[in-house]
Amino acid sequence: MKEYKTDVLIVGGGPAGLSAAAEAAGAGAEVMVAEGDLHLGGQLVKQSHKFFGSKDEFAGTRGFEIAKILKNEISQYGGRVKTFLDTTVSGYYPDEGAATLMTGEEEYFRVYPRKVVVASGAQERLIPFPNNDIPGVYGAGAVQTLMNVYGVVPGKRVLMIGAGNIGLIVSYQLMQAGVEVAAVVEGMPRVGGYWVHAAKIRRLGIPILLRHSVKRAIGDVFVTGAEITEVDERFNPVGSPTEIECDTICLAVGLAPSGELLWQAGCEMKYVPNLCGHVPYRDRYMRTSNRDVWMAGDVSGIEEASAAMIEGRIAGLAAAESLGYKVKAEKFEIFWARLKNLRAGEVGDKIRAGVAQVVVDGWEAK
Amino acid sequence: MELINSHPVLDFSHGKKVSFSFDGRDMEGFEGEPIAMALHAHGVKVYRHTPEMRRPRGFFCAIGKCSSCFMVVDGVPNVRTCVTPLKKDMKVETQNGRGSIDLSAGGVA
Ligand SMILES: Cc1cc2nc3c(=O)[nH]c(=O)nc-3n(C[C@H](O)[C@H](O)[C@H](O)COP(=O)(O)OP(=O)(O)OC[C@H]3O[C@@H](n4cnc5c(N)ncnc54)[C@H](O)[C@@H]3O)c2cc1C
Ligand code: FES
Image (tube, rainbow over all chains, first blue to last red; front, side, top):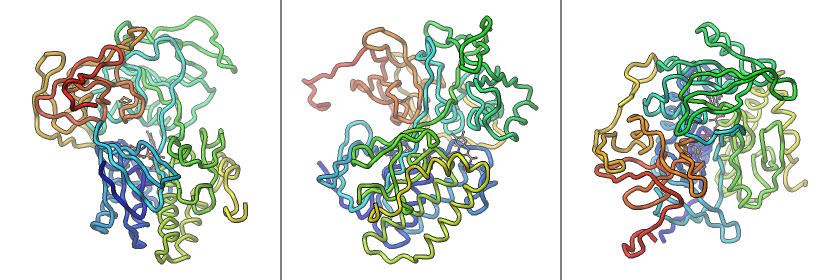
């Protein structure tokens, strides 16, 4: 088996991982970025809309363009950042300080990193309903990959489940791609996403059915329709179901952090509903209870690309610093201030309360 | 192929067209793009049947994380077709059950 050594191994080449790579390499560290997908950029490459957030984090720029900016940034470090595409980090062995990686489905190799930054993002949730396993029931991310990355029409008529930002944005993107959206169904009594996105959807004449849920998917081999029903406050169905004709049921019912490697690394984890799942305890530098492991982005709690990028910068810089590379202390101050600013106000309430449950006052102090 | 031809924001630059086979049928797709995308563009949505209940499965996550899209590719079962790049003359087959490997061929184990 082939073996490599590197200063910092970064798991995942999304906004968090690329930002971490840029800072670590900028400080002088040798960096290796392993990305399981066929391209860098993570969720960003699927986002054709202009991002919200703050100016420092490229608000107003389209997601896939932000990915290009980050790729350019790491390319300026030349050979100091090595990127491996189609390469999944499949295991981490803290006792040996080794990670196993897999390129394609069969080619395995081993990496001995001095430090690791886990920026593996998130995984989509599934909700239970009869027939939810048949083809045509797709995660929102899958639908986006199909149409926005590869230009393949995902279906002719889509039923969207979930009126959070993702459900709303993907509905809009479907319309842009020429696909009909039958309706957006949402169990809660109100729209979860930003008002601007909901307004766009309504303008296009797509009904947003609040207090509704999907009862079952219809179809033997693949989806030919869906039964939806009104629900009460406890999500129990009321009244008789309505049948909707569609060939795709798109689930935009939330994400959960993909923390498998953090578990393997023995990081102390906690279930934090505000952060959408199990996440590691961390200090302000994004270091986990495993002294060799940092993390950043959605894996540390579901938030946004803007936050993921700042966390990535903090983690990358801190990992490099721990190896003795010189970093300017005020850089941390700047990043912390940007993060604080991003999480300020009412919109940041949920995240702030979530982070407060897992942030430690320096591991030395704990 | 059902491709998006015009889009207000995105430009799609596909790679080279190559031929491959799906369950013995000749098909075309773009080299380097995931196998599952090429199949979907041809309206193929069922990629395997589950081992016990024989339920049809297509893809779900499209990022290599859920195992829904396993198929037999060039004789190798359990290939995640949503993240495996298409190559010329690939032999792609619907997977039934868990799949088996040809140990005599030696290359797979
Ligand atoms: C529809 C939609 C709209 C959005 N709109 C906005 C917006 O307007 N503004 C905003 O700020 N945010 C937005 N977001 C959120 C934003 O995209 C995410 O918060 C952000 O991408 C998280 O970055 P990340 O780097 O943590 O994870 P990801 O972008 O998910 O990247 C993680 C990467 O890690 C790779 N990976 C995972 N595990 C492994 C492994 N074991 N080995 C190798 N590679 C691995 C994955 O393939 C992936 O490329 C949106 C999200 C969606 C879905
Ligand atoms: S669709 Fe989830 S692994 Fe391929």
